[in-house]
Length: 215
Image (tube, rainbow, N blue to C red):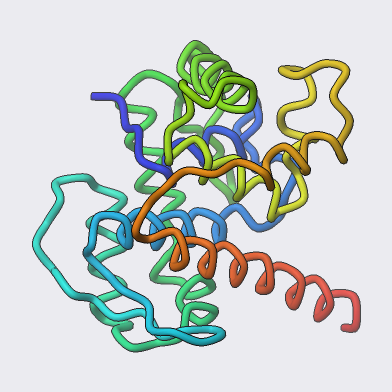
């Protein structure tokens, strides 16, 4: 069965045809943030108010979705930790479980190297359909889902939306694309929490880059 969670679809967008992370060195953290977003939308976890909020698990029942169940289990162990700590924690590395899921669906294949595992494309149609959907979400509000808006906003927050989608939206500049994504609006009771998670994800990326530059 094809996986269609937010972190699973983000994995496709952040992985190139050769199976390596594409356009960002923070795929692991981005997938973790996406999982927290989806678990928040599914009312499995909640965030308190304030900057860098604590993540609290409110329902531990399995969803029977491998990557979300792994994330939920990790968050149960990390219950009460702040979102920035959660996103970067090794227990929240969902690369393997998502890769295995897409490989089982035939979209990618697993390739084990000496030091790293890669996930080269086997059937590009799944990602092509996803990209078509995201382009439609940018141009037609009637076809826009909450998941589409979140995926686009996560790409924008990572500062790679144009790099990832430029071949799908020829003639649109990076500034125009970022502005369009910023103006997207989909009603959801969890909108504020989702925005906080994405903002904190971006902050983690910035702080990590600064640390790497300074070292």
